[in-house]
Image 1 (cartoon, rainbow, N blue to C red):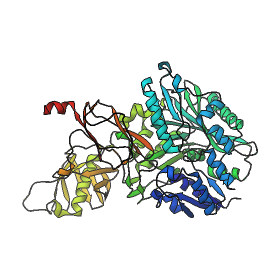
Image 2: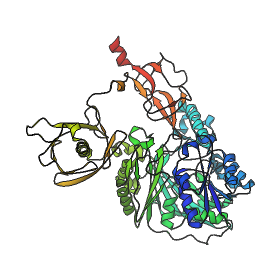
Image 3: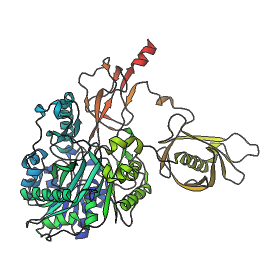
Image 4: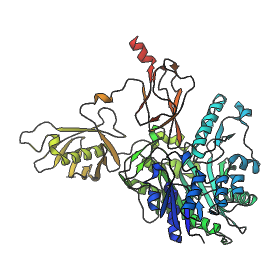
Length: 636
């Protein structure tokens, strides 16, 4: 029996594994980088070991340091979580060679299946040779041989782009997984991403624990997952089970794993086998009433599984909450989570690696949490999850919360026949429309600010009526110099009369809560203030200063860093004075383990370049200046 377990990962998966360990009476050990010293997973572990440094390559990817940490902490087992070293056979061997129990399949099995290229060859679907790809083969997908999560992955539609995308994918994969091997495979347009959860013991039993649909993805990384995959013909489901079990038996698999397919035109194309726990494993746990981590530990301890898995019940949907701005090409966001309160309760589960007061940094993945709903039907689960996310209080970096809510209610999701991996490519504009009510949130913010400091807005009620007090805010819907402009005046009874926008009556006003009546309906807004922003209910607003700060004025054509990160590449031959074309890639930033391309906004001349490989930049930092053709004509 195991007594002490180290988790060789961070964030929500480490916290989730610790939860099961506590239930089993197993002591826990965390590892952490300098950037993670105050992270939630460190606080929740019984003991923790520092890995000096901040970059993943210096910390969480250093298998030798993690083995030393396990031995130093007196652990007798290592759980790899997912990502990082979970599919690294060398790390698994190092763990077992040190006399520790490895919570996962044998190293030889990982070696056979963890590399996507070797897995495809084993199952008779070898990848394409990059040098042999022709225009007729397009589109193709460049993909990292190791790891997952959409990193090191590129869709190529033009043959001339292939070499550049191979280079970019390899660099990203090396940074994320410590392995720069990439390969090329045919790209199936708008298929459904379907996978089968397997669990196998050392006594020859292999369970297939249902299907999952993971089609809603951005940048080839899953956003919403569910179990069972809806609308699949029974015959296809039976075939998926059979092929998955056969793949597991072919390599002597033990522990938890996932076999992934792309389903299109009624056919299932094998993608890969992940020899680890998946991020989306909670939906399977909810439907089958199991704890996959507890079962992983039991298998590692030599226990036999029952001959058949439990019967499934109901439907489960998981949404990944990311610190990112979907409307800005999914740009990751950083900063302090002043308030981070996610819904719990009957039918809802939250897995997270953050709490109120924690800081989201630049070094790791942008996922804040997973929220999972389980209900008797798919429609009921979607409704429960959408409403639960709406009730979350998140004050700090921008998130994809509103996108998730809109996705769960969109016909492209509610009707299973319309599911596909192009969901966000097709519907993103509609899904990123700001939710209604922001103009009333601005009224609430203005009145709450007046309640905090009446003198700041011209004092209280006067016998001689003066002009209205005015306040402006920008938000997602109201942008630009004016934003949402609110006009109001104090009343004799200590309240406020709203004169603009029309049709709004102030019912109750306090510094932290405002109630407004609009069209006979009373709306309540909880008010909070952090870092210059005002949060009114689910809306985040920024006060518009009466007089612009001269320091905020930028030269036309300035390219600013959309997020904090590191400049990893500058386009070949890019130099001040050179000609650039609209949309031309100029440089690449790496933030939260993803590469982000910065392109020329218009055709013109590069008049300044402040970016260089290796340079760390903060959000808003000046990277380059492009003098556009129109500007050059005006100055001529």
